[in-house]
Length: 298
Image 1 (cartoon, rainbow, N blue to C red):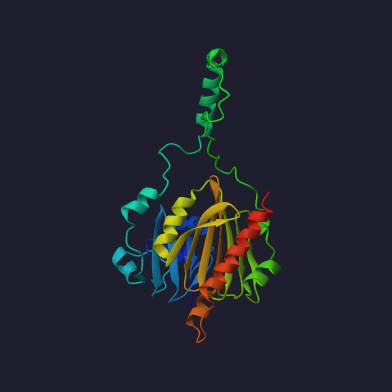
Image 2: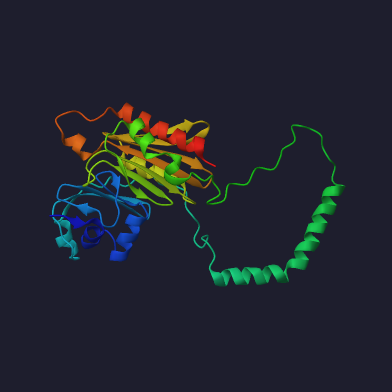
């Protein structure tokens, strides 16, 4: 017996509404057994479900399947909470935060801004003339050691275009990871995923493109949930590499954007008699996939 993951996380009260559960899945914030889950992804008893909302991650093990929302005491009987402890203060302080009200303006706010710009157009012109005049009167310096104006930070979504699936083909993912039977099961503008099993318990690789999202927050989350998290540099592009038994993830920043490659041996490998692929081998594959996406970005 199985249940949709969006129904289950709503029923056990990890999200306030069913629509919020579906939105979390579509946004790539829900993972089942280490793999990004779609809303219709089935969950079974024994599966590990990770839900990241508002910068916090809940990690639970499924012990009972339900589809209807129940009370908090009854919901607690449906899972084993394996969430990590609260992050240390220094980790919380390192997470970038957006000031309240600093989001994208509404249509009404845009109209008001346009009206203010038109009303203040003459004043702005006079100020510009005054600035140019003062600059002309200032003493020019040919000193090469003179300070220069710092470059402005990149705007959200101003990073390069990575193309479908990070610019990498299914054949290349299969060859680099050495995972047999991979098929492209998810392919949209921001997420691409390859799976080798119908129940998503086999080897999986995925590419996620986050536009206008701070990589520091993702790194802090990985630091709390993975055995090892380190800084990384690939062809001059900085990011992080997070790994655990049977899984490796690499995030690379491009201004206010970043992408993340994830390669997992799957739960079948973890539960089989034979040991899963070595962590170095999985991370080498993840690093090579990241390098190709960087090389082919436009």
